[in-house]
Image: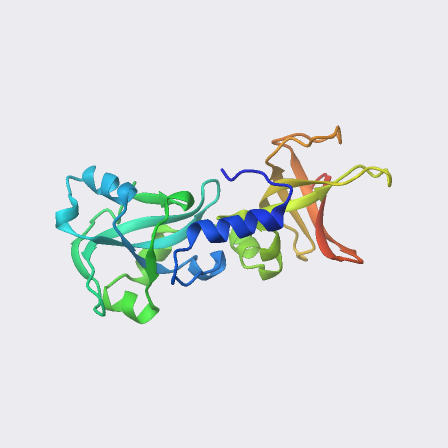
Length: 232
């Protein structure tokens, strides 16, 4: 789970700097979701491979797929062990028959990687049918993930979680920022229903784990997500 920060701009800057290496291209979360990629070996990958009786001498990289786990955030499932040589298509050493069941990197375990184009993924025989079967998502969750206008509110690495302003109806009450994991969207797309992920500092009448409704509100400084209790 990510650390709750009230200074969200600073939080995102730290996130970007921490996960980038000099000379590397930075991709937004939306740009990597649903993409195949090649990872260089790192301690976590080597540990996962050791669990399958494989060592770094068997391959210096892995091929896998970025997806969103609703609770664990953006994740990478390893489908094959490979050898990587500069300027060449990765050579598959071992293609896991179970499609990498249990071989998953979480967001904070990512290291250096290279995204594969759709053409290169097709050349390596990673099929659309296989992807759809493994990475099923409900229509409601898919619709929420497709909402690009929510991207500026999403938690880095946790694509289904958004920051929201929460306050009492009392105009003198100072709103506070909370995190909400979105679960459903109204038919007209104007409201969302989600679970409150952190306990509010103020006594606002809602608590961590409660279901709340989220919608957009216009302000002179821009557009924000605001929350209240109830159903979408």
